[in-house]
Image 1: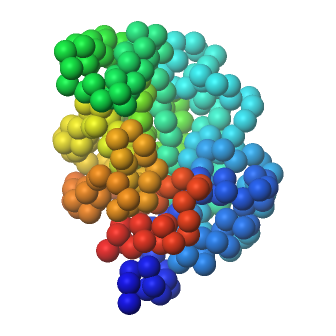
Image 2 (image 1 turned 90 degrees about the vertical axis):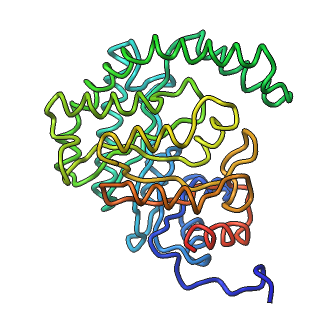
Length: 324
């Protein structure tokens, strides 16, 4: 019997399935077909993506187990494009914080234990253009060319200039919601980015968590820590291929702040294309998972986050690889 013919296991245990895959269904405000299909594949836990309107959240059956939610949840106004925790605009940061409070409320109401959130961007046009150039030259087969190496150095130098102030702004924003997180019994994981202009970098993550600790918010002290990092394997995989980050950098940076991994998105990558099923790309996800769990200090959520066009069979095969 081939792997394709093998029976679906009764359960994938603690592995959750992200509702990113729900985009394949015609009605975005009805998540029931997604949960039905996920359960048929063997999933008992789920993560809510960051695209769902309040109507979609209202469609969740009461017996569905939501392990985590991806900020913003619900999506939509008053949060605006470009609003994030690193913005130089105080009003934009305030709107992001207000949206995070709504996400915390969603997580608490659905009994989720974790929130995944993108912190923000560098808000720097030079950083954005350098990343676009590197991404484009990579796809054109020019990695390693003199200009590629030059642009990579320029990007790193520019990030070193703009990131500290951005992280400082984010520390203030996160410090304002620590009490709400703790009251809801929810941990917040700051996700590793796909684009190099998404912050924090690995070093920036360390600065962020150290900054929260220095602010004496209780966010990252001891076993009751409520803020940490969230490893997205595909995002880091893309940055590894482009040359803007390494997995080792991330593991070392988070280890230096107590190994505070709140959760992880498991998906594979080919080149700069992510959200592929495990085993369908170039990453050694088994080795990555081993390092992740060995260095963590928080109870961790694990989510299979794959794109909507993938078949149920492809997802099942990927889930088997992740769960061993």
